[in-house]
Image (cartoon, rainbow, N blue to C red; front, side, top):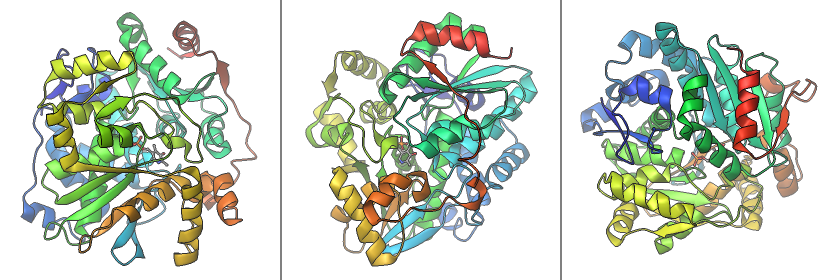
Length: 462
Ligand SMILES: *Cc1c(COP(=O)(O)O)cnc(C)c1O
């Protein structure tokens, strides 16, 4: 399987290389040159399989010769062994025809664990083979950072630096990043927003001399291997509701467009997904783009669903590349225009996007009210991100088509927002007890690429 960049001017790589590289050298994102498909029989055969076995079948066609079947199945088994639910991604009913796919049973109780735990295992196998060392650099709106630290802490040959926006992540999120005491973990509190962190990340990756000097590797959702791991639960969720014999819709609380983009790949592989509904909070660039065709960057307004407080959704570039008929030059041009605030999507591309994606946005008040409504209607407590999804899903239900909303985090990860909505403080699951007793360790740093570079050079344990 060959991987090409969305901007068309970077080296073509195999799966392991694309995974170790993260961002392509032309500034683009890697995607498989062709998307493999599964037949209706192959999809039907996933029904009732253990999650790990379904994952192996969905992931294998993308991996090529990079790993053997034994290596891959070992990595998948180790990745999900620490989850606290045997189904890994259990489906629970919210109402007739509306289901929640619970993606918060991993070690950091958000869906990022599905991809990060697997990528940690795959990195380790690759580095053991090559004897290389890498410096993992990530930017996080909260959940990616903790998931990355949890997946890479203590690994030989790896330093992990995570930038998060100072003062803009929840206390649980921050403590998950600042309390691990492994020497290879470096939490960086950047004076800025998540978009600033992501912009600095791209700057550091685009400084090729620095990149090579420290062996920079990226595990943000721009990393194709992250997207790949997330394709699996669209299959397991849809198959348990009757796919491939029946179409299923999904609603996805969306920030960087990684999770929902994985759904669009599942659809391209042959899974009968009717609609993929993008759910945003008040930071609604994606909803505006899909409704109006204008992708215009606004200013980030902090919300009670902070992991979605994003104005530039990196993975949207991948969807654009597909919608523009894999035209790297067209995508490069759009990304140039983005530097000065935004761009208009062509009519043809907009039409192509709307064939797969619908969208909706909810306010802070509606989000809070939905946490309360679901508690009254079902007794379940949902996190604010999930509540954004559920609210948008309810506006998009279609008779006869089951809807699955992705439950992206455990409510205990956002206790203040949940308490404000229902007057109850959700308990942390047992494996996280003690989080508030441990000592924190983090470095405050200016929103400046040069400062970040010197810090990384000084701290990494090369
Ligand atoms: C990361 C995250 C999202 C957004 O996912 P994207 O892949 O960035 O669109 C939504 N909810 C939670 C809880 C998250 O951690």
